[in-house]
Image (cartoon, rainbow over the protein chains, first blue to last red):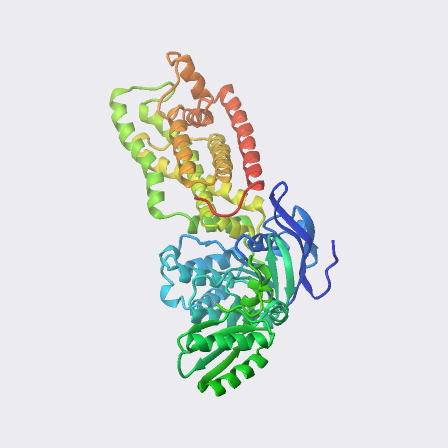
Length: 332
Length: 257
């Protein structure tokens, strides 16, 4: 087993888990989490994100390899290590009392002093916009409200490492933003966060590093910027003309762009808008501008959008070929 | 760290969070109702029963013993709801050992059983008066309730840990509850006239031993049979406890129906 580096708060070392003999949910996971870091775990459904969270939070014992939590071997971790963890499960977990009582009862379970629990419950009710719902039973809340409640409840106690398994499912954009801002603040104060999500721009915004799981294995670990650079593929160009292009004009654009030799695909036209993707779109934009001037077509706007984490993710784990693998110059 | 030990924190949480008043009313109200109605009605028809001076005096110790089933059912329900709403998983992620969660459930079973015993004793008071129990007899009753609660609680937890369907769990629980109570000496005695097969079935039921022991305490008629009954209950409680631990070790997380 690898020895924990001082800044490392949790480690996976060739970590694996099989729910049944030979059927591994995750395998050969190797990475380290640093104090104050927000680490994103991305992957398709069933890729092994929840199993990884369960392994690192000691809920499941590794069946292969190992790892450590706060410097202690995972299989030997117990109450002392779990007392330093927070875990927001993917599944809804709740007790049959009101929202406010749930918060305070959970704090009691964690041994938070009564006065502190009271003050913290008020803070969480306010932060997660649950104040008006404090007397409701959790099952009477909407899906998004329940998710907010679950995250708020976990933040009732102190921790050094927080696992969030899809914490923002069903939340509106404003609430998501508030929660992510709060988590970023906590991370700046030293809290390490492991965050699984399918909303990739959240991971892009929040995480210092992301690990992409594919079929139970780590496909790559990198910063979102690095991941986009390595796997984001083409950038998207949107050109808006002063009138729709005729079929002949569109064929001409297609021919000229293909002659420039850069990869671009697929090209789409919606009314006055033409969209295409290219690795190095600058030459194509210049060529398009020259053609428009000669053809007497006015260009209202041209925008080049950078590759997103979603582009990189799809390229990395998608079943079909990534943009870089697609045939050059194909028009649709 | 909290000055309250983890097991007690979990017990407090079990009491505060997992049960609604209507469930409690039904669970404790039903046997109390039976003592009043069944006791009063059959008292008219039946004279003394064995060493008990009347049918109601026979019934009350049996109903008191049956509270170990009520306690076990309530604790089993808490465990099942904890599984259904992922609180088992959530608690296991926290500063608790699985053994502590199990101990808390069994302690909850015992406490619910004792609450039931208290309620039954209060309800029976106008019908049979205040029983005169020595400290030893009281200790035997509480010990019997404790062992029985451990056995039935452990049994339901062991079953609940292996089943992923609420329908199946609650069906098994209901069947156990009613069969165990009816095929025991809670409502009626086993005599020489009882068919052999039925007698064998009744004596294979741990509740029979508990009911007989509590009844012996109430009638100050302890015998060697009660000592054997205590030993049988202790062995069964240990077996159920081990089964519950084994079930916990193999507990699978994730959704249950």
